[in-house]
Length: 175
Length: 175
Image (cartoon, rainbow over all chains, first blue to last red; front, side, top):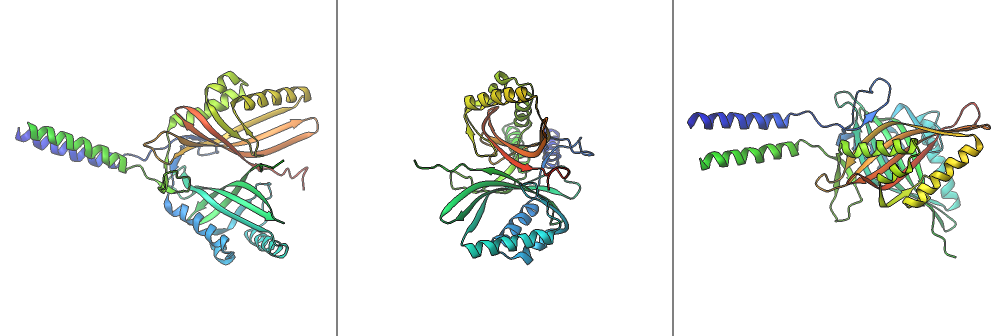
């Protein structure tokens, strides 16, 4: 009986350690060249925090800080397919849009509804952070609502690729 | 013997608890309907399979099979904001097929990634994300785009289907 208890104790501890160290689950698929054999893992909070911090800086029009979350060689593609020539060109376009809106009294407000990160290979750098946004553009009292999904590829705390996808919202009109 | 039974019971609880603790979660969601702040977990392969099955049925134009993967109360929102129920969506697909045939045009798409995330693994429902690239081609030329379909899948059926789009600027024909 004494031996049985010892064996049971060792077995319990071993199972506990094993269960804590089982490889992290992964699901899905990718057809991206070179990583076709990989599946998706959940990402890290630190990558999510980069997207969150970048958004906070953008909301405050603090473009110097916003710039610090974007890699010098980042590729930024808008939902209309336009790829900015450089990060500086992207930042300048934000400033220019702000200036136009300030002058004509229009507003552009947005807030994110979801933020999460997924990762193909947790052993190497790089995660894909997804951010769902709800946006409203208002001009002359008329509001245009839309949804945007931004996907950021983040490596070492910086956005390396930024892709925006849109979904229009059809406004209900009163007859 | 009672002590041994207690040890076995404790072991099982410990192992189950440690396995549960091994499932990381990240990010944030403002979708909460109960006031709690949820983080995102990795979803399950079975939800990924639903998205893959939806795609296969769409490609095969097998709308009877497609209907099996859609909830009777599904809400489908295209990137232009049009909202369909199951019948209006399938009717629209049949109409599109007919238009393509009459124009001698083609509409092809491929998915490159599928993954799924889940706000609360103890409850049903997962959010499956699928990245697509699409191409429409007729005698006048081709139009290409990227899209993300997000399916909210419960019990093997799509309950919400949201499409987000990103245009691709054809550098040869568009400036």
